[in-house]
Length: 453
View 1 (spheres, rainbow, N blue to C red):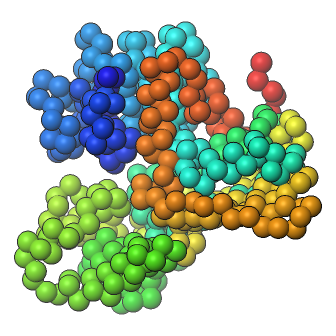
View 2: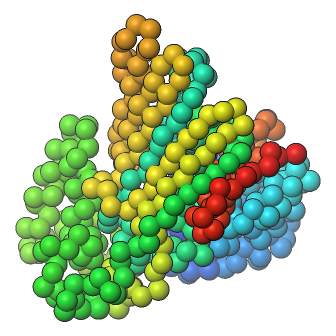
View 3: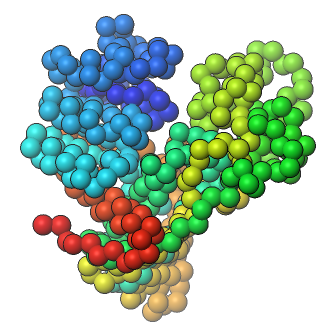
């Protein structure tokens, strides 16, 4: 049975990957955590039955002593991946690292080299390689169903409310952690995986954000909860998002799974009424305290949420956050060494969170759609003219069913020493494309990428 430590107990460290071990303790256990926030540290310790001596305020404290486990999950903030990963590798841990790997190419390569030198597994959390839809699509490509791949077109259609939450109000509202890298290294990784070759040329174009003070509705207050006359017509109203859960329930109502869709529609109708009724413990038990609400406050009471909406940036008018500069859209074109050409579009104004992918080859075409909870994949054969539907199971982890398979692949790599599907070497192409696209958009050039040595 393997053992692990978790460095960073925020949303990903607390609520993804290692939760598998709570249901399957024979696969391993978490023996320690490092988290500077005392509330999150205590919450994590309770979930994983950790004593006080197994809880550390900093990753430096955790890694300073003898090695405590076989592996470490590094789920710190996007700006703080490099140093704890280097230290964990040097201390003898195998590492599962949240994406993005790092914020510049030199640090990405430094981590890959450090893993090689330490002889340790370093896997990246590119969960969509393991999602039901994309793993099946890759299987179809590998089996030759499409012939030789010629062109790939993919889009990540970020919902309007997710963009406002994460990239206007949220921790990633500043472009020093580029949106394309932070959000869509997943997609760039999938494109490179499906292309089956290294990228050689990249171009890109960017549209700036509309969420600026210059575009704020006239008379809008600093915080939505103060009473905004535009709330009924504003898609970014913080009260509707975090307290009424209107967009989240809307996502459920649009699910193709009939039970999920019906449940979403029923909740969407019932929740505004329930907000005005004192249901006591029953209503409190039904409150949603996972993402995105969990990012707003750790005080899991209606009063705590209201206080956060009145006093923090999470409750601010999305047009008046003031220091946000992430773009609202970016288009990327890529050429690969084997002649495959690809396009990728990231934008911020979709009616729902959805990824579209189309792969065209010499013998067939594949068209896929991945929503938050479900998806579909169709394979069209050029010769027979027939279309085949590939079954895609529903998934409730927010990543198309990819979280647990990724974690199990990592554990198997730790146990056997084989390379995981998302090893850092296999993941570098996605980041090289992202860095090249950022440069291409800024300088108005086509960036040439040398092949790795």
